[in-house]
Image 1 (spheres, rainbow, N blue to C red):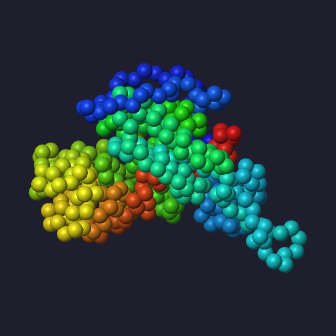
Image 2: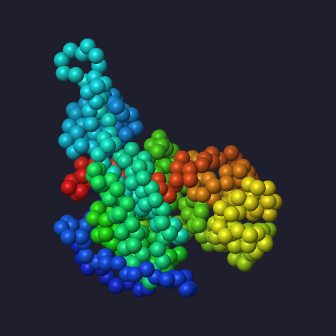
Image 3: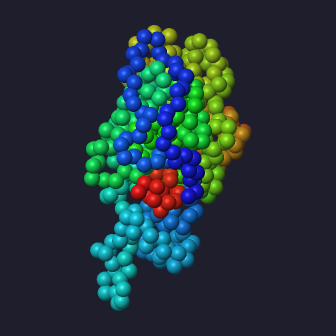
Length: 429
């Protein structure tokens, strides 16, 4: 299997240092997570590859996903595999149930054994996606086409330890998956900020986590193999899932919402530094007029959702969240609109400076800082153009739009299946 299998064990949960929590907040009652459910097999925690796999079974499955229903000879032409290799992989994928033949589409009047096209089986399988945000956690189910089948959002639980927070999320996810009793859930994928180490251990400074056993607790709680990835890298991987033609080019993915981050993709692979994803929240913003009332001069306190709301309150606006700022701006409030325009300018300048370092073929903008108030996108584009040394950079908005967190978690949940479908299915047996 191309994806790295880090752990296949069932062990008691270690005791971790307490995480920071908001003053006056109430911790939920601790939930049991240290032991797997009765009858559970070994847990599997996988490091996702976040790339377009070249394994024959993966190529055939991707062809079914993108072009199905497709005939075997056409699949051979699209993948570059021999017809005999395609026949073997189709046979194995049919036996596994991941694809199905369409006898109703057999060419009429054919002599001899009919040519039957095949397509992805979207009826029998699901994956579970979990995106853990600073304030909100989204839980989704996805079919093998990467489509969202169902979704809920919960406030990210506040607890004394990361283990308690993760256990609460896992319980919510397990209950949610229970709604699809007639379908087989193959895998779980977790996307979140911070640095993800081997075995699904996560350092997340914003949540106060150090070495949090994300992979193991989620695997034990939901009873599924689990892949864990940094969320911005997962978002870039989701772009590849939606548009694999980007394998022929490089792109810089820039995310902004409550946190800011970047990922770089080249040759159909999301680059994952061994030291963790790039940290850009401390980047200098340059002078600001309305934003950053505390004069931190740093990107994340200035341009995050919380930063914009803090600036709005400091200016006397009556808002509780970023949606309130958007509503005021849409209603014609000049101060709210000016805040959002300045945010767009700050983000655009930062995008341009980072792009000048990587020099990608194009830039993809993701996150609600760009998609929730698209009226400021021309300001972002102008700031990129006037700041970058490269004229007319190709800047695009993410295909995922406002569902970017869901799509990222879905990409992680499907990574092992898209990388080596037969091996992944064997693990879930």
